[in-house]
Length: 174
Image 1 (cartoon, rainbow, N blue to C red):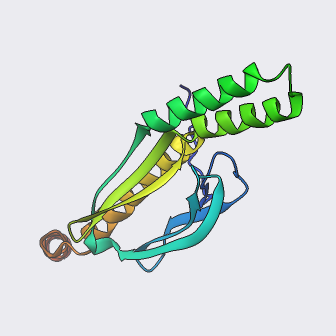
Image 2: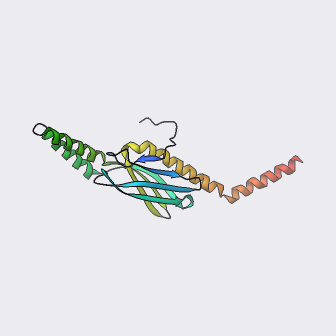
Image 3: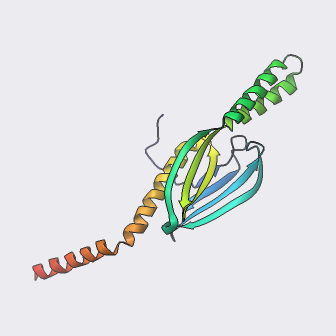
């Protein structure tokens, strides 16, 4: 798989394979919060229903990861419906095409990319379609970088050493 060199600044993510125009967004705000606003879906991700919002301070976020999941039940059901649609294609072409498309949609909804993180020890997961995998991996790296910067900015020992070294260097120059 070829991955792009540039990271995306786009914070919008498709929430479903069947309705890729319906977007949610995930981003790290300038004030240090991981913000997630995603559409919920029902019927194998085919119909949008409601919305999930979450705002977590970076200091409380840990164990950020992304992975792929395969829902065997969805894949098998989608395969059965698609094959059934193809089988009745000769007797009822319109119904056959519709069933085949629904089957392919259900089959595709069985391959999921998951973005997960822990907030105060409670795991949170965001399920996205498989074609968002690279985008989710980029976002995971962005979140990890922002968390590292967050803790680096609050590292008193490191800042004390840097300040002491600056003072010593200033005294040596005189």
